[in-house]
Length: 226
Image (tube, rainbow, N blue to C red; front, side, top):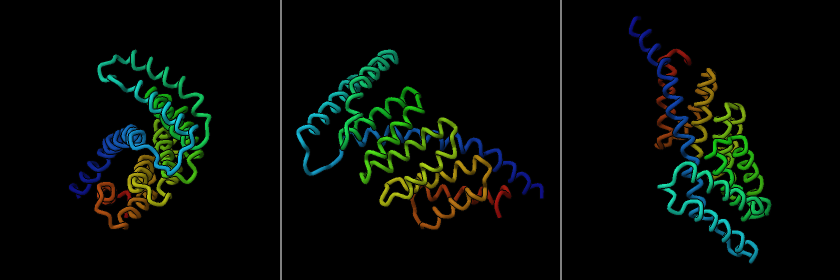
């Protein structure tokens, strides 16, 4: 009996550390995703002259922002970000591929400045503008991350779900796990378990599915679920 109580206490005490550790993992993915998008670009068959010009401008803004930036002070980096945002302003208002890419870059810059409200606004605009583009679930995922930073957990769950519901999203398991993690943090252990089980039932060998399986075990040991 004493051993069981000890197991429950250990599981409970580990929850805060677990939530903190994996919250960092979620937030750090934003920059990785955005850099990948900016480097790879969006593949289309035909570009109008206007789109070509707009994309070239964005590429130049990105180059100016990042070129030899590793040795810059935070003050100098902030100055570059400010200039980049000013140059992006007219491009964000454009439609199509140019507007989407400009909005995504503006979202990332806002996130770096810890302006999570503005960053989320940009991500949601990118999701709206992208329509059926593969960038849509990515935009919703990052809007969810911003919502977590704002402690708006209900919105975070909603946006993670939108991302997870998009067919062929390459981070569906990550999004689902994040929903479970948030519910667990809200003490909604039944809801968290349902998401973890859904992820576990996929039979995936991915790290997020395996982690979901481990969380189910921890919740059972703690007596939080049956």
